[in-house]
Length: 144
Image 1: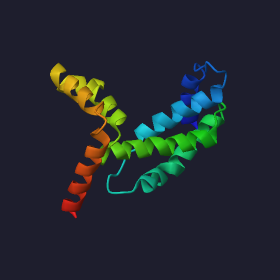
Image 2 (image 1 turned 60 degrees about the vertical axis):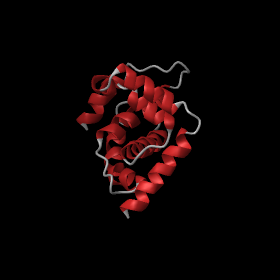
Image 3 (image 1 turned 135 degrees about the vertical axis):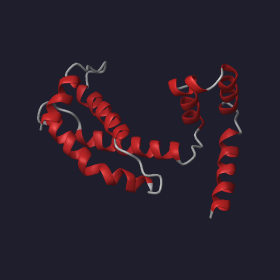
Image 4 (image 1 turned 180 degrees about the vertical axis):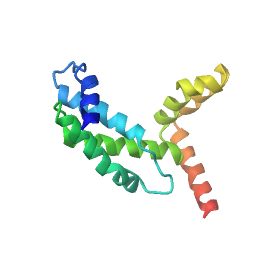
């Protein structure tokens, strides 16, 4: 029960520009939980989300005892975050995900500015997604 109180203390400061604080808080909690629990690359996206669903529900319930947030939305967003994380591990084909990863703080620590420019040019290429998906399919077929 204390975890809900502690998290609610941070969430009380959150104000939505649209006036829907419950929705904004749900998105914040979903992202925090989604990036906290480990992802098992050998499981499907659904299995990964389900593996942590009861723990996520428990935390959300404890937060709701102290502060109102949209539980249903929070759980849906939690599943989406877990799916995105699994996609990042298993070989993303979405150019915006790759671009975000390559422009991240971690990437800045490990790549040169010319590598960043090259990645930006790559992910803005219209044929990128098709080529990336084709490469992934070849790798999957070879691995089987």
